[in-house]
Amino acid sequence: MESLTKRGLFWEARASLLAWYALLMAFLLGISMPIAWQLVFAEVDARVKKDLESEVQAFQRLKDARKFPQRENVSEQELQTLFSDFFYQQLPEDDTYLIAIANGNFYRSSPAALPKVLKSNSPLIRQLVAAQSAVSGKEPTDDPQIGDILYRVKLVRVGQAREIRGLLIIAHTTAGERQEALGSILVFVKVLASVSFLALLLAWFASGKVLAPIRWIASAARSISETDLSQRIPVRGSGEMLELAMTFNAMMDRLQNAFASQRTFINDASHELRTPITIIQGHLELMGDDRDEREETVELVLDELDRMSRLVEDLILLTKAERHDFLARENVNVASLSEELFAKVRGLATRNWVLDRVVQCQIWADRQRLTQAVLNLAENATHYTEESDTIALGSSLNSSEVRLWVRDTGEGISSEDQGRIFERFARAKRGRRRSEGSGLGLSIVRAIAMAHGGRVELQAQLGVGSTFILVLPFETSTNTQL
Image 1 (cartoon, one colour):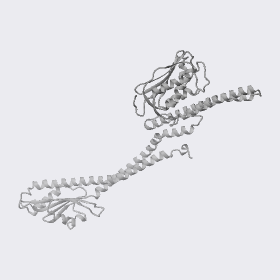
Image 2 (cartoon, one colour):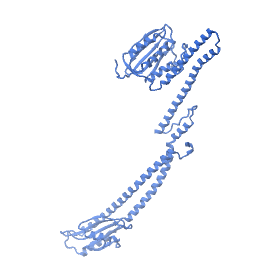
Image 3 (cartoon, helix red, strand yellow):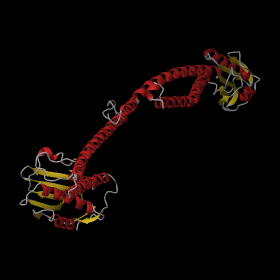
Image 4 (cartoon, helix red, strand yellow):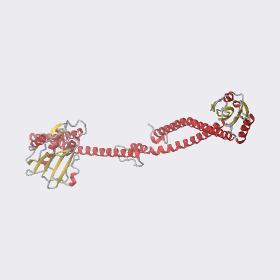
């Protein structure tokens, strides 16, 4: 499989982002051009109509000044003079044509040269001459040199009868202005294409910056091995990529801790198993033919095998603690459980056994696992107390937690050891070792508490004693205190 380092600039995620960006820009450009085309042409038509209206208003002002509406007798000479004066005063813009009709006949135009579609015998002019009211409109043509014709017709009425004596046709061909608009659009397209190309280049480099954490993750992942989990991604930037880098680093921290814990566990387990194996092997090799010696050796071997069996069972239990089916929960009466546990622990050793306090409530828990945890704590307490010392059990409840404790007045635990005794195969450094256990008892207690969603708290002082407290969430199938 080709590595990311050999792909150079053209690796999949970056190229895909750029391709989608280019397609999006092309799509937007494709739909924006027709819209821009229509908007520009609509703007041209609106401006032309405004110019036509201004011509009509200018003609109306001149006609009102000559008092044509109030006069009954208006000669053809006066009508022609009106049109001539207006043509003299108004110089039409490019592609604009002024056409005067007097008494139904074509009089003159400005400019004199008219396109074919606006000549006196054209269908459009004959139609407009026959108009009985002021009209305006748009006439399409097939001539690309003319385009569409926008027109406005102003009637000349005289006297009380409002007789139509003439009319002024103002027409404008759109081909010229549309060509100018098209040129502007083409310039706009060229500029937009150049800007889009520049934007793609900038997007290429920007995507490289944005996707840099992914390359760092890939590089870090390639450099990680079972023996070296120390590689981390530089935490830079902000937002999702920063969160990605931090999440990856946090995952690597967990993996590194898990691998370190696994190696420590394997080393400790092998050390704990190596001792009984060595003892068994040595005694079997030295075993002679004497019957008493053989019986003594067999008894010792069986004892070491029992210790190995307990160690393996404890290891299996700790492994199962991480499974979802580790607990078989039911409603457990805490008062009944406390009294039952007290009856069981009294047979562990000769001590001053005390039942401190019992709470009346129910919790949703695994009765057997809780019994196993408390018995482990009680047995551990017997190893570090004398016959005259007190070992007490009890239970209590607050609003959200149930607490089961084992308290003793033994030799206590130093603050240095309190942070490590719950680790696998750990034992207190300060204090006498009175047990040949595997060092997994407190680890099992913590695993049972955590499986219930709780924790183990320790209160201890050298020479005073220790109190181990199982803190469990107060929850039941009915969540009802008795």
